[in-house]
Image (cartoon, rainbow, N blue to C red):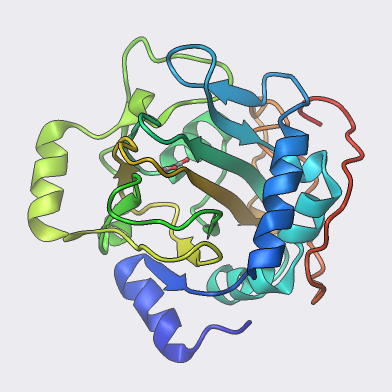
Length: 273
Ligand SMILES: O=C(O)CCC(=O)C(=O)O
C-alpha cells in the first residue's frame, strides 16, 4: 500500500489520514482469534477498567503472538509509516484498546508524544501511530476524536496530573490538557472522528490532541494501535525507560513483507516479553 501525494499532504495538514479496506474480513477474524489467545497470558501488560476486572487494553502482543509479529511487519502498515516518518522504523509501542459494549470507558484528551518524551526520553516526535479498526467504528461506539491540525502546535500544553504518578502504564487522564487549553484549541481546531468499517487503518501524528468518549452502544470497539519510531530516535540515557511491554527495546529496523495474515496458533513466550 502506498499513500498518494494528496494523502501525505492531508497528513501534514490535519495530523491524520484514514485508509478503508486495508484488512479483509478473514484477516480480521484471524486477528480477533489471536487477540483472544493473547489475553490468556497474564501480566502487567493487561490493563483493566476502573472495576479492576474488565479489560481496557493489552500491550505488546507482537512480542508474544506470531500473528501480531506478522502484522507489525506487514507492508500495508509499515510501508505508509515509512512514507510518513522516514526509513528504519521499529515498534516503540503496541496496544489493543478494547472498549466493551454498554460502558467501555473514555480516553481523556491527550497528546502521545509528551508522555514518551518525559517518561521514556524519546528525543523527538519522529514517530507515527497506526490504528487498525478491529470492529466497525461509528459515532455510537466511542470513536477516537481528533482536534484537526493540532499536531502543528507541538507538545506545549500537556501536563502530568498531580498524583498521577505511576511507573508503568500512564493513562491519558493522568497526562492531559487543561480545560482552558482544550476550549481554546477546540475553538480553532475542528473536532472530527474518522469512522468506518473494520479493516480501516488510521495513521495519526504523536502530537495531535485526541481522546474518546465511553461506548454506550451494544457493539464492541477494539482498536489496535502500533507506534513506529525511527531507530535513530529511540529513547536513550540518562535514565531508564519504562518496562519493555510499554517501550520496545529492539530498535532494529523492520523489514516489510507482503503476505496475508493467516491464522497462527499462539506460541506465547510469557508476560510482557
Ligand atoms: O482507544 C481510544 O479511544 C484512544 C486511545 C488513545 O488515544 C491512546 O491509547 O493513546
